[in-house]
Length: 267
Image 1 (cartoon, rainbow, N blue to C red):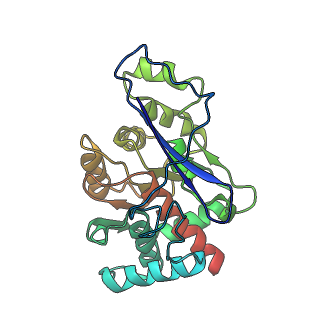
Image 2: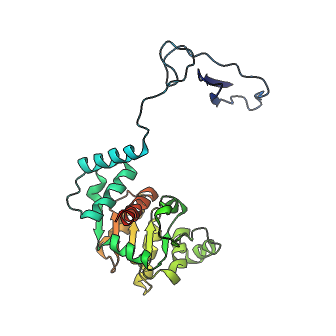
Image 3: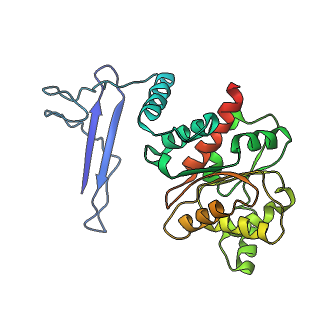
């Protein structure tokens, strides 16, 4: 059976159609060539005012993007405990909290070294920016990157699946091995895979090159907390920011790096 809800705006012929199909009989065929009769809505809903018939409702909410940002950041700075962070680190913390909506994330944030200065110096020197996934790449405000800067993700490189098979590890971990030629002095942003962070640390322990700055936000129930705990215990001479525990993700990783980019733009 098919249920269709059609709402027509009072000032336009435009319509919003919400459909749900329950195929109780696998042989059931919906005839989509027949015109659909609009359903009159006579009770209050998200679509209508009480007592109206199918009239679209203009909801009241803040629409100005600059004001939305201003109020969001003001709320975070008012509610979060940011006293232990210096200026640039506090800006990064605000961005991370804004990305996840969790004020208490500030309690688990850990910085070592000057991740803002290390990242700025790396970008000024034209060093590479590596991410573990395409999601992390998409989370970065690329228009704020310095001219000529590029973000590299090797997860979908043609050699990655074979490397993962040979190394008996995940594709994200295998992809890290492809960073080696340009890893020295670079920026690494990990927003998904604990195995990518573990692989980076193992490569450095084996004598490989070190990035200048690491934004470590792997997420999940297996390896996320452990990989970040290893980085915190032994930074290996790298500046970093991470969120202890299971929480993380590409949105937080990108937001942390965006904090650096926006700070550089505003200076």
